[in-house]
Image (cartoon, rainbow, N blue to C red; front, side, top):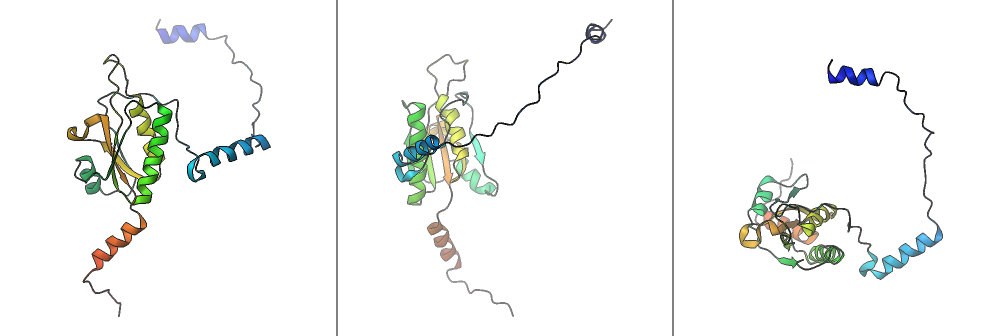
Length: 198
């Protein structure tokens, strides 16, 4: 007799348990909750709430390669980012920071870079190799991977080349600011005659 047949023979008299119907819970915002959110928003610069996760993200392997691009990013642009061929306009070092400190630093860094019209950044998150090499110990690396995907201004990112920190760092490509888009249009159209349909 096979294991499958034996299983069905043993389970022949078993009936499923009856469950109580589930109720849908709807949370209503009470006045205390609203006041707490207002106070928290006022405590942060520009009233912005940092919605990035600061718990529950799995650490990554030290050698894991971070790799992300949003739809619409050209292959050539992403390849140039991956190869480290863009000038790094700003860098952020997260070594020796707690997850909460790093979360605030990353959010502020990306926001500030966007306001300044910067496009290519480098974030050094480290490899977390202080523990046994068999464990996934790159805690900040796991969080940075999640945070960058949550931030709308981030168009793409990829682990850096060895000269810039290898898998302990990440290149980040931000959206073009409106000013940069305008400059590119002007440069592209310079000396060209606009087409007028007949």
